[in-house]
Length: 100
Image (cartoon, rainbow, N blue to C red; front, side):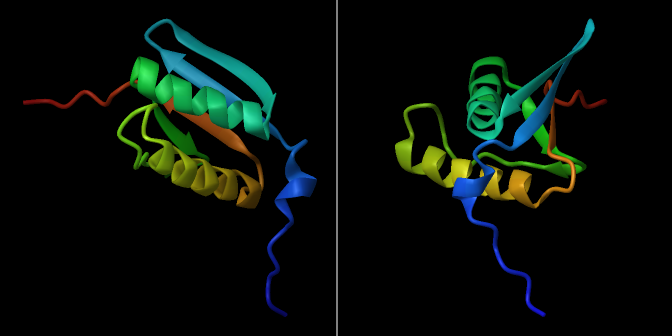
């Protein structure tokens, strides 16, 4: 049987756990999906945090908070990833540090 897509209206109350990491440790938040997407977006553009949904990296296509079309597309993709996840968790990390 084909998998059917869940109606997003029914998922507005989906709780997402967000773990924000930095050099002092981490902070964990639990938010409804719409608030979580807003938090992830703000942390990415304001603090340079990179989101991972479970083990999958999420790459923003928007160039900034003023890129309305890009943000809309990113919001749709992020929502779909969270709704399809068995355990909706986002880890926000700082930029990766590379060696020489």
